[in-house]
Image (cartoon, rainbow, N blue to C red; front, side, top):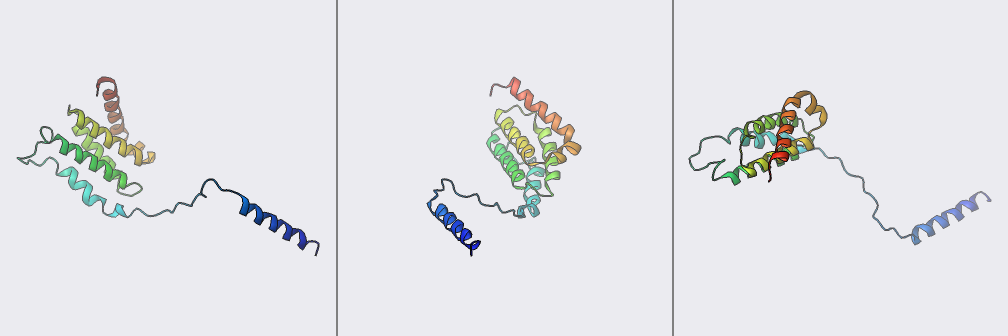
Length: 156
């Protein structure tokens, strides 16, 4: 009986401490790991946007009057890259987007430069380093030079 008495006493103390203790912050919840189901269908949105942007449409001039629409396209493409984080398609998407950005980086419009910077940063943020280093190192170096050039030479 002497061995059971201290346990009861300790349990009573622990219960009283638990009841009287104020918890200032909420207990941390375990984050649930879920599969990114968007990865299966991301290609149906991403690639048509990239491949069909330069179709000649008489009413649209992406680098002229409709530059805002082109910037919305760049923002949408960057968001698609963010949403495809952790998917198998991300490696090919990053490569394709870097090729696209290298083709349009010479556009002198400030708003387009901001859209290009947004897309570059989206890819660099969500793409793991082991994807970027072996396959995309030359493209990344060229785009980093582009970003440095913007930082040093542009007032905007």
